[in-house]
Length: 384
Ligand SMILES: [Zn+2]
Image (cartoon, helix red, strand yellow):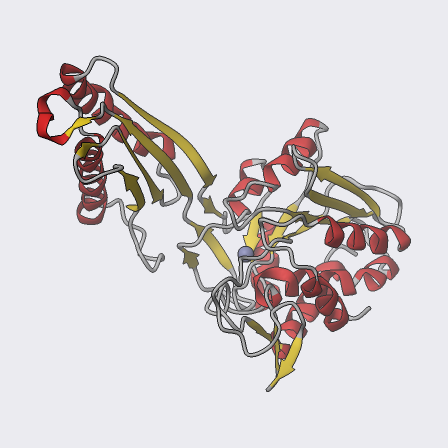
């Protein structure tokens, strides 16, 4: 199958993160295995989803080293979006291919899969690998399962390309993302008897204001990295729930906040500032009212920041092949930091624009797919 046929196939599987991706994964597994690749699946704990890791060995059969092509197979929902064509039917209009995931990021995967027969025919000195994950869009949940397994067996790779949509330009850094869910447990009471209750919403509000204060501190004092569109670490509360009635002191207030840390800023240290405020100021004050008051903070979706080395061979190779020397850093999270933290030099480069990702009428330009094909062919040739 060529790139377009592969893309049509991949888009036809509704792999919205809440669904299983197994049909897509098994289709890719069968196609790769039929072409002589070594393929294995690493399933989710519940077993309803899987990562796929495949190797096209070098000409001499070697499987160590080489380059990993990485992509996530899940897509964001189309719920409530107005589409001009069926989101899971690849549709061409005006030189563009429309469909959910066409840009983010099944286009890259399709181009890689279409090249497998060529890759096989190349007398490569190094292997090529595919690493396809599940549940990236809900916070890079799937890839760690695969990477842990690879790490356990001591797998070594020379470099990794994460094909997120960058308009085929080189992205050398992204911020981390850290989502936290906070539950403030107070004590209910009739609201005419305020002294006998402990108002969970009011204490949550204090904590939310403190999070905002920390965010403003980053904005005003840095650290800064001017290569990012938002050049400082951000922190924001985006969801809240609490209270059951107008005349009842709320027992529970629950909210979700996130922070996006610049590379080099420790996520643990940032969260440490929140924890310190809770432990030394907020909770002691709450417990004066109610000894059993509690504040529970649980970490949710998270992915580490990513910062590529310009000296790494993979960075130089991708820069040379794309003729792109620009230092481009992005605020959105990718799986690149996970690969880098495993000791694999990584860059982000893929077809389509992030502008089209996640939107109704998501599309990838056919010209972008062609450029990705040429790029990935040269990646294979670089291993000869
Ligand atoms: Zn993506």
